Length: 278
Ligand code: C2E
Ligand code: MG
Ligand code: MG
Ligand code: MG
Image (cartoon, rainbow, N blue to C red; front, side):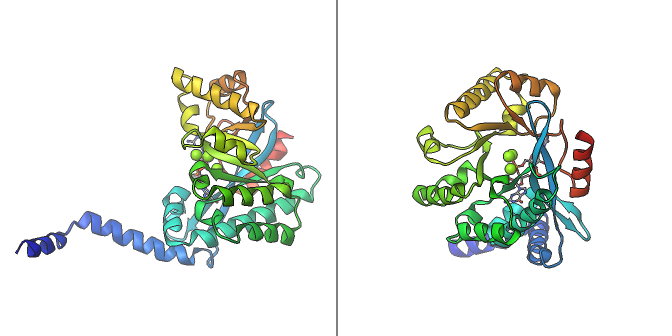
């Protein structure tokens, strides 16, 4: 009897929830076709040095859906992580980014630019991730020193030996690693010390409240000091105001990214804004 009740509760029907599930299933089905139908696009957001000089960009994926319009990554990357499409998407992103780097490297005005690419956990932990990256670099014949891979702290948890080995192999050919959303995860200093990192990327959440929150000021100062003592470069993400930039500058931050300098935009727009800056 009790068991029957249990079964009955499973039949409880929430139309709201049902439509969410249906919408997600629909999106998932379309996600599987999106590469084939060329619906992904990379947007580029400029990264600056401390004298407001553009050093490069971060590549950020957008899904241009024929009916739904532009879908931001947070609405499909987690889904892609869950159903495994992230592997094909990740390859597409790397390949497109390297194709763009090749174009930049053939022009004297843009050959110095770096391009940062976000790498997801599943993608990084594939056994052949390193050879995939090397192959793409060779296919496009680009200078690996201009390619940056953004990893998150949570991605780095897990098989430490394997992570360090993969990063070392790629770092040896010149690829730089940036630790994204830094400060939101759990990396220990002991651990950080072992990774061949080039850069820490201060998470936007600390920059957001930098001007009003004394604790965040202390955290940011500590992150920057730590980065410098480990010999790492440091970039702040989500910089929206001059005041935030000023505070970061006085604490020793050397690189900046955020709406203050430019939103992520399609390649034509990005290159047009570069020309204006030069
Ligand atoms: P992220 O790597 O931390 O990228 C920074 C995010 O902050 C981007 O959001 C960017 O548009 C946004 N942002 C930058 N400056 C500002 C600012 O001043 N104000 C505000 N409000 N936002 C700012 P986006 O493009 O929506 O990407 C969100 C996340 O999706 C990324 O966070 C990254 O985790 C993921 N993602 C984006 N592209 C890719 C990709 O190609 N592959 C993978 N695996 N993940 C990606
Ligand atoms: Mg990033
Ligand atoms: Mg970030
Ligand atoms: Mg972030």
